[in-house]
Each structure stands twice: as structure tokens, then as C-alpha cells.
Image (tube, rainbow, N blue to C red; front, side, top):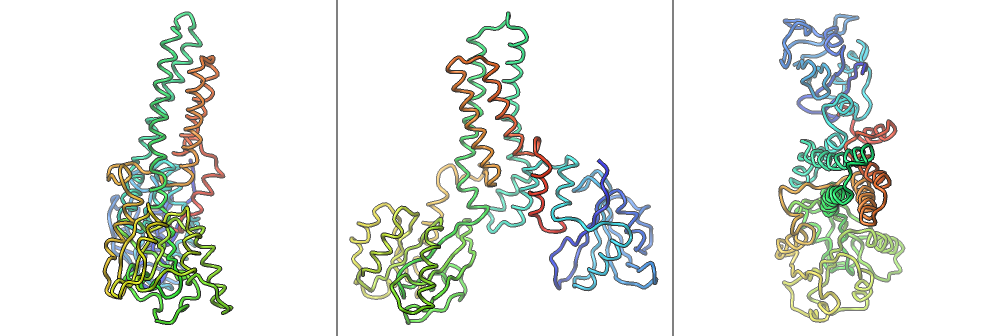
Length: 458
């Protein structure tokens, strides 16, 4: 496949010690050579070497930058094309000027994700690995990074290919049976196909069981901190974040709008949302905040319900109890450093199955127990295993669910003694759906949509 040469800034924009401009394509070395002055021309140097020199404006012969240039020749590069990376001083003007000279010398500005797209198109990685690159970049916890890295290395892809191979063997067996019906032993054929399909269905089902945990690792757990005013919601947020993000006072209704922050809790990325205290109020601003809190509550993956150890339950508490029924709730009894006026038995009666954690945000006690309760809810059993293959991408999950249903249709057809050429239709469809996960049957529009979500220069 012939492609032009592309270039983009590969490091974040802004001031920094260095900035890197990446150039990829058959003309990349020749293009950079037009503006580079060093001991040797880049076209003569060995692959995977770094060279010191200067960037020159060829029209004025003016020295623009002092640089280190890395030369990496195909095919042993990320894109499997010739790649040149120019490391210059970090700063908006210097890096933009160097990029401008590279573009003027014949390169084209890369589209978002185009370097990774070329790695896919040139066969270095498959589509699942390409998507995992972005998950790796966006990882918010060590656990999420490990899951993404295992997918970048192809762990999920190898599993999908193995499942496709099972289905391919089943289709091959059907073809042979159809071509040579006189040699067919019907019971043997049906048992063979049933075994292959059941094995594939079992593995897809196991993958889908990790989908919830995988999606949480990828996108974060939307966590709403709710309760009536002045129970310590903002103090709890500050304790989890370990920073004074929210204003804390003794005045009820201090938080009038939502405050959002990401925090790593035992490997679980929490998208914490400190909501306005839910109560009836005549204050127009506070009323808007309360309504927003109610909306957020219904969208949350996890609810941290905060109660005051120092106060008896009120009608406001009971109203919140009703609002959180059916949601994932951890009950937090805060302000345990004060005398008890809260009826804990009454609380447990309303939340018999939910974890209950005693905390004092003021004295910072109970936070470890809260973090443990959060991790236990979402990462227990098989989902907590380090070597487990997670599926976290919404596109993958959708395709796997379709494939599981299609394989189930094939199993039902085999059990009902349907003609095997009819069963083959479902088996082939499942094989195609799994192929879409790794990009072996993906259309151009899908590829454009996926790679457009990448950052420029990746």
C-alpha cells in the first residue's frame, strides 16, 4: 500500500524540557534531510541511531533549532515505515517552527491516530491492539494500565484468533461433509460441531463476565457522594482525593453545585462527584444544585450514602433512602468522633445487604475500610486475577454479545438436528463477528471512526 509521508507533534503542547516531532513514510528521511545539518546526512546513517545537529530554514539558511534526530528504517518501526523523530526544545514557538519546516519540505500533517492506523494497515498490530493503545494512554490506575498493556501485546487478540480457528475447523468439517456425503456419519459430525461451538460459547461467556470490571477500568466508576446537608460529604471527598478540593464549613448547604475529581482507589478509577446536599430548600441556587444531584444519582455506578453519626434519622434521610433503592450503595456513617445519636439498627434494616463503613473524615479514620469495600464490590473472584483477559471496549463487548447469541443459535440448530448447511450460516456469522473485533472484517468507515478518537501524533 502506497502512502504519503506524515508528520505531527508527538508530545503534549506547552512548555517543557523537550518536544518530539514524529515523521513517518517512505520520504521521511529525505524530507528531514532537507532541513537538517549535522556531521552526516541522515540518508547515509544506520537505522535506529540518534544524531546531533541543527534545523535550518533552507530559504534563508537561518539556524532554527538545535536537535537530536532519531532515524528508524522500515520495517522495524511502529508504523513499519521509515520513521524520523526530531527532539527539540520544548516550547510553543520552537516546535511549531520545526514542524512547519518539515511540512514545507514535503510532509503532510497527520490526522488524529494516523500513525497507529498505519501500524494497523501495515500489519504490525490488529484493530484490538490499536484500540488498546489509546486505553493505555488514558489509563488512570496501575490495574487499568496492566489490562491495556496486555491487550497492546495481543493477549485478547490471540484468544479471539483461537476462537475463530475453532469455528473455522467446524466450517471446514461441514464443507467436507457436504462435498462427500457418502462418508458422513451424522452422529460424529453433530458431536464434533457441538463440541466446537460449546467450547467457543463458553470462552465468549467467560470474556463477557469480565466486561463490567473491564469497562470500569477503562472508563472509571461514576461515584456519587450523596446525603443531606452537613453530613461530611465534602470532607469525605477531600479525604479520598487527599487534597482540599471542596469547601468545608459548619454551614448547611455549602456545596451548591457538583464537584468532580478522579481518584485511584485500590486500582479502581473513581470519578468522584460530590453533590449538593439533598433537601427541600427555597434558595434558588441551592435548589438547582439539589435537582442536579438527583439526576446524577440515577446515572451513578456507585453511590456513597453519607449519614451523620451525631444526628438521628430525619425525613430527609428517609427520602434519600428511597431514592437510592436498587443502586450499588455503600453506607458511610461519618462523624464518629462525636457522640452517637444515629440508630444504626434502623439504618441496617433499610440496607441489610450493603456494606456499612464507620468513618470520621475529621480524624481521617475509616478511609482504608471504605477503599477496601469499594474494591471488594467491583473486583472479587475471577475478576481480581492478574492473568485474566479483560474485555473493556464497548465495541468489543457488543460484538462478543452478538457472537455469543449466534453461536447459541448454532448449538440449538445442532441439537434440533437441523441440516448442517443451515447450521453453517450461524457458525460463519459468529466467525465474522469475532473477526470484526480484531479488524479482519472491518470496514473503512469503522476504521476512520476509531482512529479519529486518538490524539494527534499517535
